[in-house]
Length: 118
Image 1 (tube, rainbow, N blue to C red):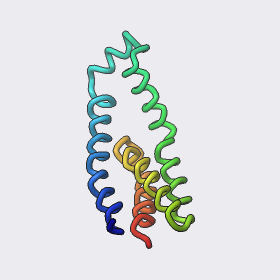
Image 2: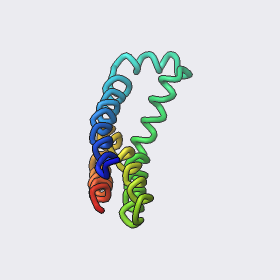
Image 3: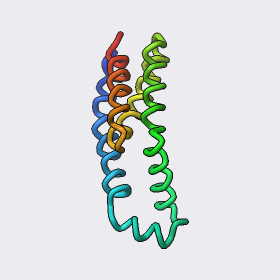
């Protein structure tokens, strides 16, 4: 098995994760049909997901958790740090897409730097 295989798989996974994050943003958070529907039927699971994401965006939970995980990954050596950096990147990309770019950009850069470090 090549030592670059995990990096290649990661580079193939990231565009799909980015597309899924944008799909969530535009299909659920910005689509106008959900505003009226969630006012009438707030107990639907889609409305609950939308409300939960709204709270996570408001309190910047994704961005702060991505930054904390990326900083921990930067300090940990070896495979554990690499896996934590991957988790930080997976948390940071949706945070970038879902309106907390000013904080999440640092998490994505730190996690990316940790992923390419030997």
